[in-house]
Amino acid sequence: MLNSLVRDVALARKREGILKSEYDTKKAAFEAETSGLRESLKEASAYTSVAESRLRVAAVEEWKLDGNKQQTGTTIKVVKHLVYTDKSAMDWALEHKLFLELDRKGFETYAKKTPPDFVRIDEEATAAIASDLSEFLE
Image (cartoon, rainbow, N blue to C red):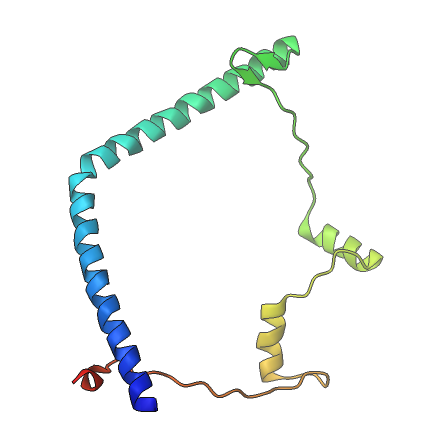
């Protein structure tokens, strides 16, 4: 039973390896063929970002002067930003018993070393498959 399953895994890995190799070869050729185009695209994207940023700044300046939210080619949106410190927000949350969330990763790291009374530690067996199964392909 296990021998046939191991052979199946070995064959699957072999096929995957062949396909990955073919994919990597074609991907490398594609990347070499399009390297100039990618560089041009990167430069065009950078220029677009700068141009858009300049337009946004100019539109906001115009809005500050005339109050018109419909500027040429743009619409001014006013967004509210909350300003507070993490400490003041945490103090408020603890006081009101709201918006408190368990840091699951931190708790589990702690509980593995020093489990509280309500934590039960179960064990589960898993099988690690050998990386070299070539002997099963013969």
